[in-house]
Length: 256
Image (cartoon, rainbow, N blue to C red; front, top):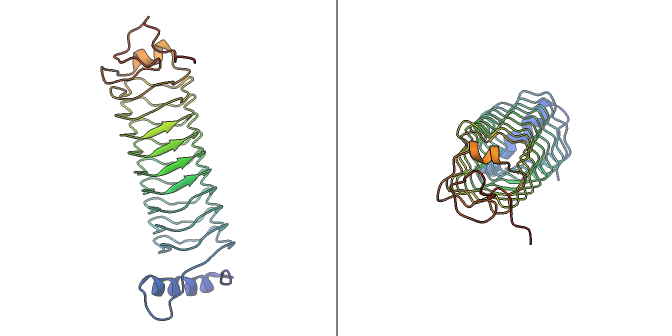
């Protein structure tokens, strides 16, 4: 690990050497900013692709349109950072903190999102295609218009999140929490598996569950399922095929 940057000019040296490394040019050195404090800086458009940024503090920093694809951001702190339009495809975000961050239009394609905190972040229109999410927190986050297509989502917390018009095409969810979440205005769960997840108090008005797998889903009420769109392709919580009919008891998962 190299010495962390002490000031803005030292950081520019790291970035210049990193660009040479990316270009496979002589003298290039991969940026390793582990443990650095880079708070409240203007780093819009910065290229830190594949950089090592473990335990780095980016609190209140402007990283809009930055290239952080393939970067290792394990344990990094990006609270209140502006990452609008940034690329974090393939990044390792294990235990990183994005609370209150601006993440609109960010690409998280194939990112590793394990234990990551997105509480109250603005993630409108983010792309999380084929990302792996385990134990992540999206409490009260704005996920309207977000894409979770083909994601593997395990034991994540979406309590109070706004999932309006979000798309979860072929996503595989297990034991997630959607308590008090808003998934109305045609949130699309097409071909999604939601097994053993919880939906206590979630608003599913007009949500598209026409081909969703709801086997074992708990805390869904008659009113919630009645307000959502179900069809013959829906697997209801009790394991039967849809569409959901009031009074059928299909909202209750089978206990073994």
